[in-house]
Length: 88
Image (cartoon, rainbow, N blue to C red; front, side, top):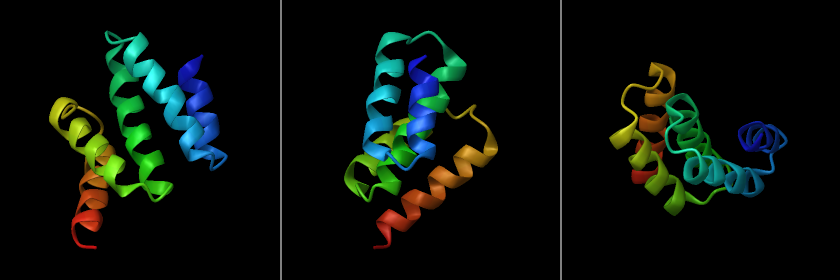
């Protein structure tokens, strides 16, 4: 699936390639709640890891706005990454 391909690319440090897969999941499967929050978080994390802080900021903010029910570890890490971006 696109979600698994995204995670595999992310773990192989192919950050921008993984973004394509997560973006496809978000657009193609809007009603799959558990895949939506994870894909949004993973896409933001991929941008962050690639050093694309502008897109990371955008995607983390979307994640925090729409997926507040996500696992606490995701919310804490998203907040930490945003703080790092803002304090650069």
